[in-house]
Image 1 (cartoon, chains in turn yellow, green):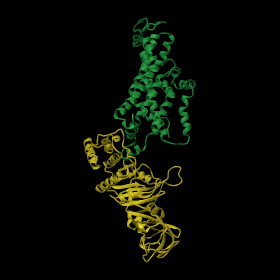
Image 2: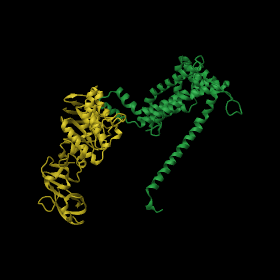
Image 3: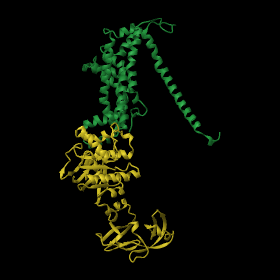
Image 4: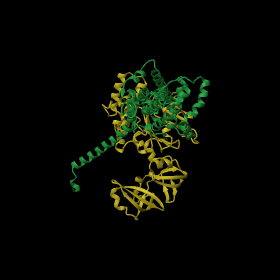
Amino acid sequence: MTHVLLDNLTITFQGMSHPAVDAIDLEMEEGKLTALLGPSGCGKTTTMKLIAGLLKPSQGDILFDGKSILSVPAEKRNTAMVFQKHLLFPYMSIGENIAFGLRMRREKKAFREQRIKEMLDFVHLPDMARRRPAQLSGGQQQRVALARALVVEPDVLLLDEPLSALDAHLRDEMGELIRSIQTKLGITTLLVTHDQEEAVVLADKIAVMFKGRICQYDKPPVFYQRPASVDVAEFFGARNMIKATMQGKSAETVVGTLEVEPGELTTGKAVLTIRPEEITLGENGVNSLEAKVISKVYMGTHVRVRFLIKGIEIEGLFTKETMSEFQEGRILTLSFPPKSIWAIPD
Amino acid sequence: MAKDTMTMTSQAEKSIVIRRKKHVRRWIAISFLMTFLILPLIPLFIWSFGFNWFFPNVLPTRWGIRAWAYVFDPTAQILPALWDSLVIAIGTVLISLVIGIPAGRALGLNVFRGKRLVEFLVLAPTIVPPLAVVLGIHVVFLKLGLADTLIGVILVHLIPVLPYVTLVLTGVFANYDPEFEDQARSLGAGTITIIWRIMIPSIFPGIIVAALFSFIISWAQYVTTLLIGGGRVQTLPLLLYAFARSGDYAVTGAISVIFITPGILMLLFTSRYLTGKNQALGGIGR
């Protein structure tokens, strides 16, 4: 197991005014799966390529177990990368593809054969060694790509959007496989993804990246309850954002004064968010407001309702039993529990 | 017949019609090939075995193997010329690939300032008449001691060859994914391993096509060989021309048959790389 530390890591591409990766510090715990999450172009794949040694940083350092590995060339760094495209060598059999890393390490043939068999069993593709990549389905190819990376027993496993090229039902399967293998082998893993759901399901910790910088690094649930910025909140699907001015426990907003749980933010401008499912119907003592129903959408188990409160649109999510309450144009009382409201500094 | 009685047999008939159509099309293709490629070659064979063949006879009045005996006579010039032609063509193929692969990679994978100009310069030899260029080069080669040598002829053959080789390989590299190389490196492969085990196998069909172009163009060079070789370097086209002018049609026919053989053999051996699916026939990309 390897402990990975990125220290002030920066890279600026030639001809670019802004760094693609801007002074990031990140500590990946040994044996854990860390997700690097962000929109496309935020520098997450670049960060991964820096760790793999495929790019050289302009500044900063990368440390494996406390030792800098910057002077080690990519082919000698014991990292293995799985790309978004499976990138199986088309003129080699599945077995030869898996054994590629072992050949590069000059392992004996008998050992290679044995490892090919082990790895194929591991990714649930027994007896496929003699096939050609083109004879496999997309999901199978991606599993072979994973096996090819794992066979070299890397210090750090780097996964670049390994699920994004797959169909929805294959994603879950592949995601579970990655998670189970990663836990079983305890390889320090970095997963790059633009899909917050994927990150939440797979990762022990998530680093959210925007414009080359890491905005928040936390355990998955924190991003839903306590997002550090409006960008992060929006990225995690936060809906109801209301601008406010904080005064201790109360927040002044256009919809009225709302009571919030005492947090770190007690003065100044803020944006309040509350998740749609936390809003309750009916008078509840504090933070009760009159709202007009604009529209509703039946979603199977739930009903998604949009309201208007003093010109501000609010979205709520309720159980389907309450569906009949939400007739369009009706005025209802909604409650916003103080502990569910989170104030983000604006 | 009503629509709903459309039965299996009528569907089968339909597919037979389609198959027959394909059949017909293939035969049209083959007959075109015969007419324009094979037919003109038949007189060469007849000539090479003919003794007397004058108008209005359809076939020679006397037959013999004099011409072929002469061609394979070790004291005649033909076999050494065949050897030199082969050495020059193979040398041209190798050098053109060594230059063309990096050039094709640069043009096919990268976007850079002045790329259009470079592309134009690469293609320029196909527009400028080689005679004009070679006359100038001859002076330089004389000074460098390259005139009248095999190396000199190989170098001058590169002029008409390189545009085609570069163009073919540019097309191949435009469809090549360099991330395969990153993947291999991340699994522990060094640069030389990457070139031999990743890049070359990936672009192999394109290399075959480029080599074929290179060989055939070099094989057919006349003016450039004559000027730079200065008569010291004798290749098959030079002899062919000399015999054709002397009026010995039998020997001319025999040399012609030898002359066209490597091209046809190479086409046969590499035909599986020459399908429309081959990216080598795509041209400049990106």
